[in-house]
Length: 259
Ligand code: HH2
Image (cartoon, rainbow, N blue to C red; front, side, top):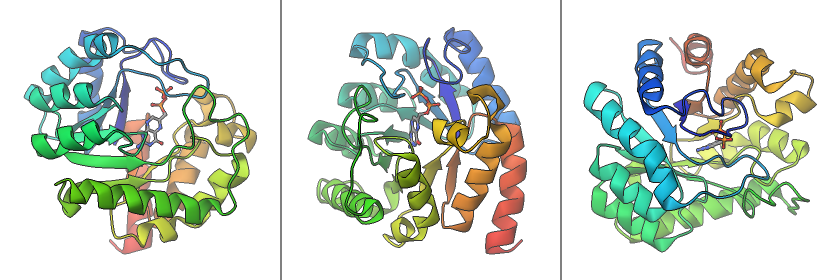
């Protein structure tokens, strides 16, 4: 799942693909490099980020999603938690909605069900502006699992097909370093829900805390973390560095599941 951030302020690639034509070109290159899915986002959800309006978000992602959906064969997902953005994105060709709030808004579930799209439900504690203040859990793995299970059930009861759902524990979203490590180490508990598991570790700050270097230099740490996640049950790896990640995950996948 290739990350395509059409934002001025994403934590590792902000501003690089803010021009729609540049973003579309980057999406095409990501497909060429082996991506199975392009995830287009128009609002940074990094810790401390301020929300953007729906008008601004659509101005950023609308043309890119429509342009890419016309030009590529792999699915396009929209990284949004706003129901109206999801509905418009589906209308112009997105086939998956990646919602970092785990479909907290019932209108979001209805947009997805009505549009016949797939959904990635991610766990986040709180909201981006404050989520890293002092995240606390009694049992992070159990609480994340229970949350994802409940949100998936609600989505299914509102008409989203079971096979259209994937889940994501949300590395870095209201979690300390220890929480992130525990979630990756016990990802099999999330996988036991029976939905495909998406994992987003690419360039994230917990890697820096482990000695992996600054955001632009975290490729090797990102691949190490993604490999561990695959070994513990992840099916989909969300990544910025597509060519390198695809090559590494081909090997990781064969080691874990057989050639
Ligand atoms: N992480 C980010 C954004 N969306 N979606 C899923 N499903 N899982 C993730 O781990 C995830 C996500 C944050 O990374 P990025 O998009 O690179 O940064 P920003 O939010 O600053 O745009």
